[in-house]
Image (cartoon, rainbow over all chains, first blue to last red):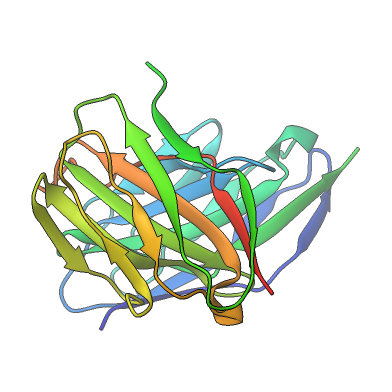
Length: 110
Length: 116
């Protein structure tokens, strides 16, 4: 089956630092790709998505580009804030289901 | 709209006990699903439903039952709880399973279950 691999955390950054969270996938074909965010004590929320190769998803200053050559969908943000501290999940669509990565904890210090 | 609601928020069970985790949504969503979240393993799909009267198994269905008698409700039943079922359980819903709909899933706040 399809799978998603994320970089292990936690990732600890100072405020205004540049963020990259790596995500690679294994899949048949070119599935839609997503990033979800989970703030402390809450359920997951869709952060951004890309439905085909070379698409760039963006939201709240976060960006990710669908790279079929490297089967990757890395999440980036130019300047993180303390409020970005959360768990970030990469996911792909497989049929009528979503397959999630293990999640990456991000901690941003002021 | 209340969105997706889950009860209880926290539950402690003894091995062998049964219980039902409740999930309800008021958005008239066709698609509903249950995930469990374990450290280092992300979210794993337990069961899902594409509409009232229709359910299917996900990645980790053993030990869990579901039913979908109404569009709004999708309860998850543990028939005989085991320590391996200690986890955080999330219910989610979305408009449908067609392209462009499934991915915008709305998640509930979760139920934390401890099985002793």
